[in-house]
Length: 359
Image (cartoon, rainbow, N blue to C red; front, side):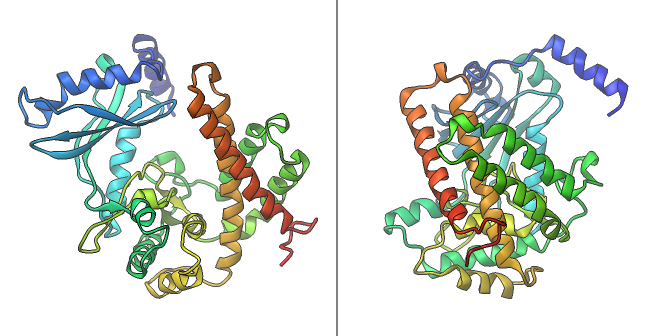
């Protein structure tokens, strides 16, 4: 990054300080009243009442129903010149569309200087995905997924992973063009060690530390694969399917060039016992995936990484400004942390002292 660019960033942060996470909601509502209708071609029309879907430290998601445009989702990010989430979201969607996958239609993307200056946010409005999420469909059917659903997911995932790229990390950022996969993952493991303090977990902290060290030692075997385009958060809540069987991918801020087993490890957690994962994997491999032998070990590897990252995420969320967190939310995060610890404990119990699988 050039000295001139850093200077511009510093000046901009002085002139337009970032708003607090608590102040993000009113800014979004103001933008939806003052700017969004005209920019969407509605003149002075009302977009409708926006309902909160999710809110984090730096992001906010609203859902609203417009008579003219249908169901819309508003995604807003606190502005930070170092990262441009609205641009990244759009370009990630273009990558998925380039892989012949369906993504929601973005009706408005605003990361303009005027929006940064006046509202201190970046924002996207997109039309809702067609159909229903696989998560809600599975709940209605008692947790069982139909064959054509997971076959569609297997084929689409193989299509996605067939798109290989030159770097780990988000591919549209120039500084990642020569990224080192090993350095990338070692950095993530260092963060895990820092974000899982011994006094905040019930698990044996030494066992957790040894597991992270073991994963770091095994890393070269899994970082050598040519990077593929992966979704990064492939759960039933992020896959929509309509009556014609068309699959739509949402929440693709985490799309990046990485290892196919990252997605497969997430998928294996929710495929029904009645539809064994090996059948899913068979369709996946028959659908043009570039994955080769040894994939089961790689999936196991990234399942452990995912559990550690889930544990780390819940600890960070639970301990960040706890005085401002509602009791129900605090209890929810505590329950999710306990669940992650229990699942991780099962993984650790199935490993011998040297880290090899007991099976």
